[in-house]
Amino acid sequence: MAGVLPASLRAATPDSTPGHATLRAGDLTAVVGDNSAEGEHCAGYNGVWSLHHAAGTRSVFVPALAGLNLEHIVTGEHLDGDSKLFFEPRNAPMSFKQLSESEVELCQPPTPTFHIESWTRFRLAAPHYLDMSFRCVAHEHLFTRGYLALFWASYINAPADKSMYFLGGLDGQKNHWTQFCTQWHNDQSTVRHRDDTFEMTFAPGGRDTLFKSLSRFRFDQPFYYGNFDDLVWLVMFDRAEGIRFTHSPSGGGAISALQTTNPAWDFQFLIEKPEVMKEYSFRVRTVLRPRCSREELLAEFEKWKSVKRSH
Image 1 (cartoon, rainbow, N blue to C red):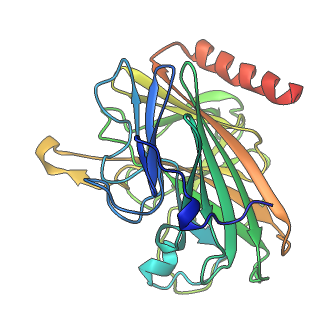
Image 2 (tube, rainbow, N blue to C red):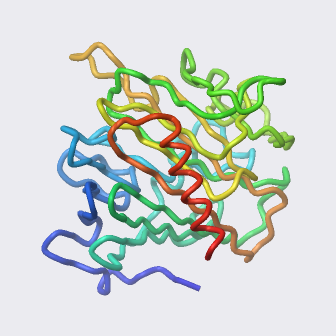
């Protein structure tokens, strides 16, 4: 099993520092890093600091923040106001390792309160793919409510269309193209799979959260997309089980000069009845490409599914 990389062994290249690196493949350029600050990027935001397409003019993600940012560890407890605890993965130490010109790994030792150790790899692949693979291990049994959930946030850089789109719908509306744009933060925010019947419970008196507030919509296929300028960002998962989609119209803050907000296009990984020292994992492939038809987006999803089946 992978471990935490000592600071003295972290990779450093002309295009990287001990905390982040610039990756390039095909039409994509990404900066991926840990929780450190650098330039306009703020401390406390890990994952993909920026993501550019050759045909675009700016990063999909808010420059000071990040995308695919590991943000919350959720057990139903400790939601009573401590921001460092609420955002524990954003505040706990991480190490960074560059594996190649197109791949890096973030390692987080067991966190102080929830004791979750994790490894996240990011890889660019031509012509327009960004892959994320995640593994985690719980070091202590703290799951009195019978679940562990991990939450990722992607803060989108003031798109004209703040909506997420997916195949799903209300009861009786299976596999309908569904536009999902919540009216305000923490309101009907989370979409579950059609077969997801697990009810997360929470300690009384905790704050309102995106993951507590459930939408009436259900998704049928494990992917969603959003429109960004003349590009489309497609997010595909290797399973439906345990995956939940989450939206906020303003999670990335406001831009007063533009009179608009930065939405958050988020997701969760829910583990029922987690066991100590057992590894749990999942994979995500994202696509950033010029806007195209929904048929082409479906073809991207089907192509990735066929590749997964062959491995």
